[in-house]
Structures are given as structure tokens and as C-alpha cells.
Image 1 (cartoon, helix red, strand yellow):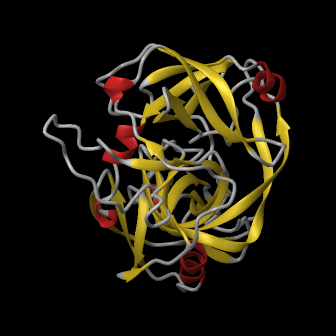
Image 2 (cartoon, rainbow, N blue to C red):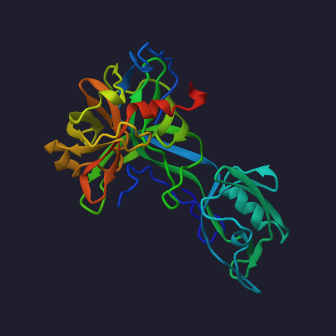
Amino acid sequence: MYNKKNKDFRVRALSLFLCAAMTISLLFSMFAFSASAAGNKYEGLKLIPGGIPFGVKFNTAGVMVVGFCDVDASQGSSNPAYASGIRIKDIITKVNGKELTDANELTNIIENCDGKNVTLTYKRNGTEKTVTIKPAYSVSESRYKTGVWVRDSGAGIGTVTFINPKNNAFAGLGHGICDGETGELIPMQRGVVTDVTVNGIKKGVAGTPGEIKGYFGVAKKGTLLENTNCGVYGMFSEKPSGVGEAIFVGTRNEVKNGEAYIICTLDSGAACKYKIEISGINYDSKTSKCFTVSIKDPALIEKTGGIVQGMSGSPIIQNGKLIGAVTHVLINDPATGYGIFIENMLDNMPDLLK
């Protein structure tokens, strides 16, 4: 995390939250499949259920605007960035026509502009725009500033949903990595995947989501390649330990109200099965909230209170098939949350991984 006090551009740490709150608070990948005559393109597909934690560290593609702070110039307070039209959630991609690598680079260019205009290129809702800004000189800090805070990196913990046994590609989370302040999907560059050692659990209670606590391993275990609304995608350098055998995928039409189980890793350090109940199925959903998940396992409720941050991506097994993953929790009812159809995760596989 880069968090330099009184700097014009500030980067704050990002956590991979399980939840998007309701007063609600990775990859798949590269395998071949064939469509059957019945139209089920995933018929016969086998994947290894995950249930193991993973850590990610990544940089954004450009820098995301997350806030503003006025500059105390000699002629009075001003905010050159905001006045130019830049807004929260904008992604700054270039400075003076040059591709931007990180927030430090942007800060250095602004501070050493000698009062000259600076041209920023940014994206908003997929549209690229360019503005010219004249930085203001801060009297108290003796440097030039534009009055904007940005983020350029993130790190956090999630759960692997499945692994392709043919090439060790994987998927996790079941939802996208979003900025904690703006709620927007992070425009991610490739990141690093590490293993995680779980060393504690903060139990969830009504109004306050719980959390799986852990620390990153030092060795790189793979690469994070894509961040989408239905999961994150990457490649392990080798098959992780602690996972089982490949099982068949179950399509949305095979998901039924009733019993199922999830796989996740808690403080025991081993992936374990826990009973749940599925209800409220929306067979037409293309989002990360396709059905309701209710935790029914006394052991899991005793340990976590239900669904907690870090469990996002925990695979859901019903009738012997991998049918989805846990994605969200209800803040006021930690024993209840949502799941995503495994089909939605497969359907959102980026083209670059096909």
C-alpha cells in the first residue's frame, strides 16, 4: 500500500471483500468444451472444486480517482482537477500523452511541472476524454498539486471456486473485485497470486460482517489475469495441494431448492465441507446473485456466524455436481447470503483465456 501523507495522489489498500452489502455490504479458464445436441455446452465438463484460500496483489490499469482535496494556493483554495471536469470513478490512463504506470509517476510529474499545464487522459463509462489542468501551488506544502486522490493497487484474500485439471487455470470469488469507496469494478492489470495461511476468524454478527484472517505466502503461486463481474480469473503455476478430484459441472437447470454443501478453509488449515440450503432460485439471472444460500451447519455457524469475508468463491456442491459459488452475505443476517450459477462464471470467461 502506498499512503503518503499530504501527497496529491494517495493510494489506499484494497481488500477483496466477500460482500457487496445489501444493506448488502477467480479463473477459470482455458479449457475446451463442446456443445451437446441438447444444447448444454458444459455437458461432460469436469472441474476440481477449490475451497482453498488464495491471496492476490495487483495494480490497476491506470489510476482510479477516489476523492478530492482542495489546494491552499496563495490566491485562495482551489481544486484544479475537479474544476477541469474530472470526477470520482474516472480512470486516469495517460499524463502528457504518456501511458501512466502508477500513482507515484503521476505525483512526480505534477510536483515537478513548474506551474506548466499538464494534460490528463482518462476514461469514464468506456469513453476516453482528455483535459488540460494547471496545477496549483500549495503554500503550506511548497509544491504543485491538482487536488485529486487516486488508487493504483490492491491486495486481499478470497477463495478458489474451481481449477481446470488440464492446465491449472482457476476461477474464484464469483463476483468482481470492486473499489471499496466507489463500488466500481477495478480495471485490473495482471496481478500475482500467492498462497494464504489462515490464522484467525472474526465471527460475523448482525450489522457487522465477519472475516477470515490470514497472511500471504512469500512465493508467487500463479498469475491473476482478469477481473469480471462474475469472478476473477488466473493460472496457477502448479496444482495446489489440499484439493480433491474433478467432478462434473451442474447447469442452472439442475440446481434445486434444498440441501447442498460448500467447501471452504477456516482455521483448521484444511478445506472442509459444510451443509447449506438453497432457495429462491432465479434461473434467468446472469449476475452474481442467482439464489439464496442459508448456512445450516452448526460447526460453521459456531466458527464464523455464517458467511464471512474471505469465503467468497467457496464452491457449492449439490447432488455430486459443482453448481455454483458463494458470493454475498446479508449484513443483517450473516447466516444467509447469495450464490452464483457456475454457468455464469464459465460464461464470463474472458476471450483471452478461451
